[in-house]
Length: 137
Image 1 (cartoon, rainbow, N blue to C red):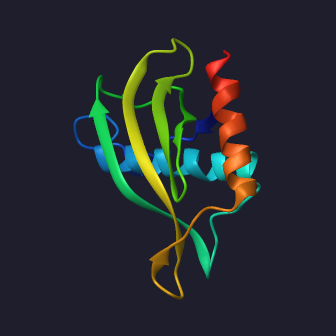
Image 2 (tube, rainbow, N blue to C red; image 1 turned 90 degrees about the vertical axis):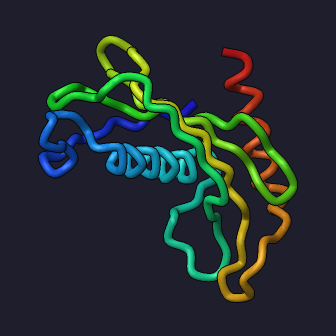
């Protein structure tokens, strides 16, 4: 599991004093970027081949309020041939209270040719190792 500390910005807060749901998706994207870097050794600045989100589901459990210390936990829950599924949790870093959960299906994609491709064996091995490591916790 990769944990990403989030710096909440003034613009993230809506008139009701909580983090807008759209901004929470940005937080999950930051978690994805850390996951790609730490697990796969990738940066999300690809031009020819990389990863795209093909499905996501978010459950908003508890409001995230202004000035809360928050972080995103990202772990892998499934590895396929062309895709993998990530599970994110937005949490209060002090209390560990889960605020929002999200799953995202990521697909290996060739942007030049506009099609998915089978993930390299190296990616599959790293993703599987990370998933097994998380299962052992």
